[in-house]
Image (tube, rainbow, N blue to C red; front, side):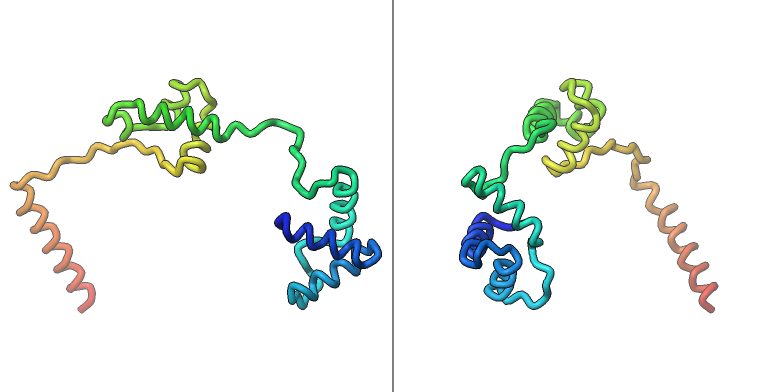
Length: 154
């Protein structure tokens, strides 16, 4: 993707080289020290960019039509919901629960949590608690496994 400065340079080279897209690209490649013919833009794309520039007078990208992005709005809603949850509930946060609380679709909540907010919901798993009397049985098991490993290597 070309920056505005690079696009402006290509426009300058286009008009400097008698409105020839190929000559402008050759000059651009020479200026940038590119040896191969594959550059950041093709001749047809440069012609299209020039038509757009002549029509609008701007090199900035136009706003595209279509469905508007709701990523930022959803991310703030999801973040506020997660922060308002109690400390215990925050550890058990899951996309489905946040989705039910906010009314936002599960997929949008999932994307907001993982991609935008860089959070990875999880569920706590309950494991058996280790107590001091268990130490001897754990040590015995470890010694047994270690002895079997030594027997197999001999």
